[in-house]
Length: 137
Image (cartoon, rainbow, N blue to C red; front, side, top):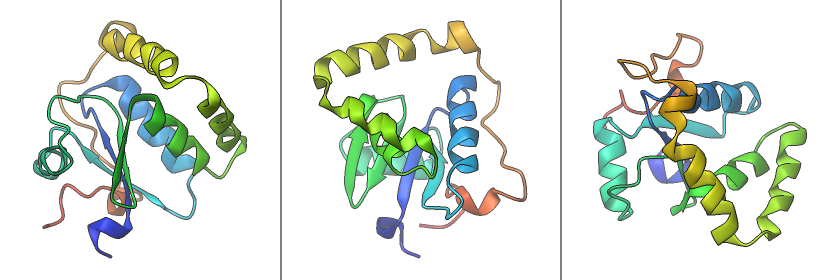
């Protein structure tokens, strides 16, 4: 399956909150729509450059060749989940500046609040196919 037909989530591979978020999404995405790569990976860096997002170090969703960042990424991901969480998309009506301010505040303190790892998340064999950084592009 080509990359442009996947919903790709770029995440901070050393952030505990981000790693938890990846696990949360996987558990609520039984049809495996979402695939993942760490921002720190070669593929992550390539995608940042391709979409003009160098310097963005938080959750990014690439869906249908469009990049979503900050609160838009979170809401688009929620919309794609197979649980009640998809209804969180209703918060899309709030002004983006307001939503993004809350998102950026949490992102700014994510290491202080949730800690960080010394190494990127290592997927288990059961979910390894959902991670793209090991595949040749």
